[in-house]
Length: 250
Image 1 (tube, rainbow, N blue to C red):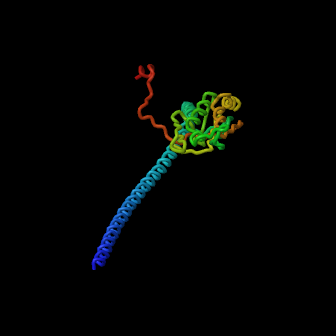
Image 2: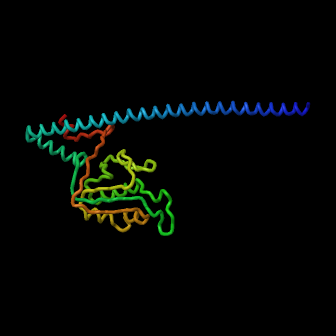
Image 3: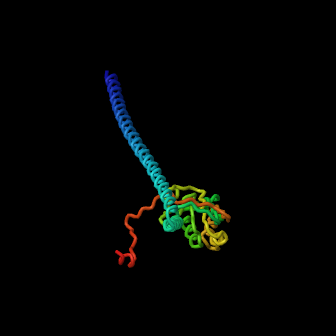
């Protein structure tokens, strides 16, 4: 009789433990499902916001293109009206050329950059970071080209202007808010021999990059085309300073 009581007691304890475990498991599944549902709702909200921003960006690009077409028409009308208007139009064209707001073509060089493929310098292994081209490398090349007389520069088709920024964002490089990955193709208009010589200086930026095993190719071109800057430039704080002569006239 005692044995039966002990068996029944043991079975009862096991049943209680199983019931407890089943209850906990059920609650866990409910919580996980609720969290997953909240996560899915959050992802849908983010995707919805992204879609709205993409549509807004398309609308702004269309408005910008319409404004550019209007300006082109105004300029055409002005050129046909008077000599002074033609003079102003030529000045505007020169300003746009210098600011990077028009497509340009001319002789120059093309530099193609790739990450290090061997992953080592001599017998020493490179770290994952050391085998990658960084934003600093691109900035140094752009600076050297500018110092060597480059009149227009672009990176993977993105025009470099006075307000351009080149910076790392995770595994990619951001140029004018455009994410880029290798190969990086840098084009520069100027005297080809002069630009190529600046890039091939002993101890220069390209020479140092070759030591690290980066894939680098430089070609001289009789004519290359560099696109205009496609973004917008806003001055919220900077204003033009009037000359003393202009102030006196007022």
